[in-house]
Image 1 (cartoon, helix red, strand yellow):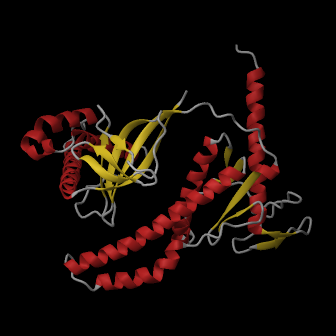
Image 2 (cartoon, one colour):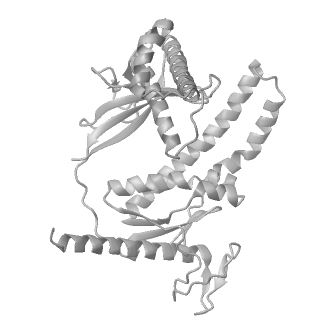
Image 3 (cartoon, helix red, strand yellow):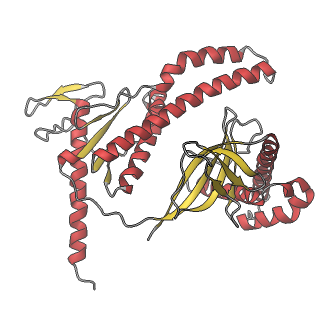
Length: 397
């Protein structure tokens, strides 16, 4: 059976002593990452071959832990994972998935480190009383930390690692990664049009589906924009680094985090509702980041969170053996008349309604596109199923 990974994030409430250990660990992880990055840049600039992650890790154990004895006081896996993260950052850069690695700042609002499971050094202690959520989580160098255990993993899930993070508002979380064997999920039959849904992205409405309904996204950032502007004006007039400046900065960060959490909650609930109601969902392969930069829709596009919603929808459908179909972004879904199939090439971006010159039907642009996306997605599923059937019937050479 295939092995799957899934994480559960818990809120933790460290004691004063545990807070000191956490801040020390954050600092040591940041130092090791920055020193390793500086060494790699220096080797490359001098014309030498850069070190592998294992060589860097061995150098840190032999040299840095001798020169800086306080590195021995924190979790060793946290320092090792910092070096491994740098190696992953370099790979992402050279493969074109990310920018060049940057030095970590002490002033960054988010601090984190990852530690590995070994010899039961990471454990979840459930609440003693029924009906309560206050339990404990055992972490290396911290011991038992008070935590909100809102959800317990199944018994057959195995702990792999734990990532402790501090967000911009000063709240501390631990995300525990589990591995589990997933039993084979029966693939549902290719559905008909009633059990399939096409989604056409819309900046003001989030999407318009093939049932001519929209999500009605609340635009959480837009709602908080006036209050954010007011609080940021107050922040700009304060002396940087003062006590009042830090308090005001925290107010601004809390407003940003609230909008982000509302958006996350909205996308999770909406994707779950759709995944439970339909057997196939079809969407376009849109580059939302490029759209936000070129069409003057940056704030609206990022406020919607449609890319995050699409990822949530994908894994929730696949967990149930359902279909998530992505059609080509160059498919003319808006220009094609759903009634007769005529492609109206003269359609402009500002035309929200148009009349088909071939059959004379009045067309709602977004609804028409959602219908075409649904039909094209179902066509792709049938083509794929037919190709699989033909390959199975051809005898092996």
